[in-house]
Image (cartoon, rainbow, N blue to C red; front, side, top):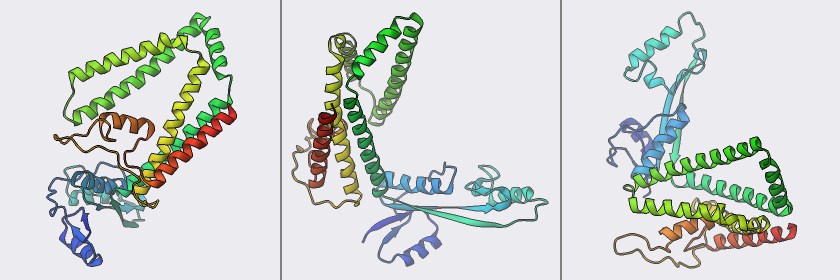
Length: 330
């Protein structure tokens, strides 16, 4: 029997839901040993219901539905609404909340109101479906950029000519430098903060790996900004376009994979599985699509060690289609 968590310990609610869903094993928060207070930090009933359901699913691994209820008073523009339980303050009880409501309704004749309840169900399908759609849209946008770059053949010469013209003026040249510096600096800070959070979540930072990463960053920067001057811009754009075609094809295939996982597209099984088995310590080998190298290839090109038939066909279709369009317009 399928197990679903109802994010409540209210026995009356549980009884009603269990009677309405006899084919499902409806669990309470107590049943899954969840005794902490669930987060309710959003400013809408919908947001709170989703936050609670998602919290239970992410932490305890059970599909979950949660509800949030609020009193909607028309004369108060919908207040107290999502803040019904803490309208008079975070430490106030229902009596003080009602006193504040009555105080605000003084000399107001229209006291029409209603209760609103929102229920949110959260499992792997919701975020999977959203992620799949986003990846496919992103692949389409990237494909459009690739075709646009190929169509504008003289973009490299135009950019070089305009840059040289701008750099001839000290003020404009300084402006270009500051724009480039601030843009790269901002993206670099965002990347550092993101990776720092990921590493701390996984158990901390490695000084040796950090130094190695810094050294590799300096080396790549040298190759791009010093040695890169020797590479013709046209060649650079052509190589970049080819790499982007593989990236877009990987994004499209990954989006199809996620839609398969969500049940939107039928899954006809795996074609092959070349993922090596886990190591004795429980970690993944380098070339596993969850290993270090495999994860990098998956993030860049959508590499998957055990693709489905539709996923592989989607990758081949997008790769060949974008390659054909790129050659046709270039």
